[in-house]
Image (cartoon, rainbow, N blue to C red; front, side, top):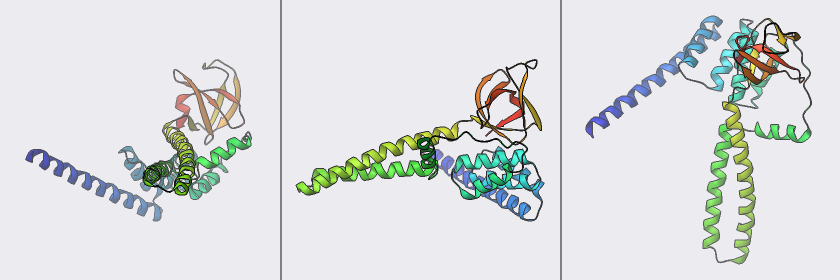
Length: 251
């Protein structure tokens, strides 16, 4: 028991030291960025992320550093990754829009049906973690109302609690669906950024197949399928084709 306790203390101290080192590295990278040493900041941010630390702030700062060095594909990639962690963030969306305005391809989006647009806006209303917290809070409230309902002897009170419970139950079901979708979407890598300056999109996963259209670095694409080292991609206007996996980087 003493050995386990001692080992636990050592591991806890190591964990605290690791967190302190990571925070020190982040502050170092931030200072390098503020001083205009963008390449140094990029190196430190990338090292932190490679060590397994990921957050919207880190990706956002890294995206800003890449933007300052005019590396638009890497800037857009990291802004998209930051937005994946924290959908709906206005600063991230603004900087991403600025970066996208500077790329070659200006693809017109296919309009969403009104209910799909409404659902998308609802999902980004709060972060994935926020939806999970909301779900826990609703279930807790539901349990409390159920307990009060069982203990109450007033018919009017029980009716009010019953209706309130139904409303909260429906809200909990809706929230659980959104929480699950936002979680699974944050884990998926079904979108990517083009990293080749000029990329012909093929009709099939074969170098000898015909070129359907050409896209350029910085463009966001959706990954539809994968065969060997080829990915079938779809762009915002609905056009599809095949590109080499090495030419794109997943978000």
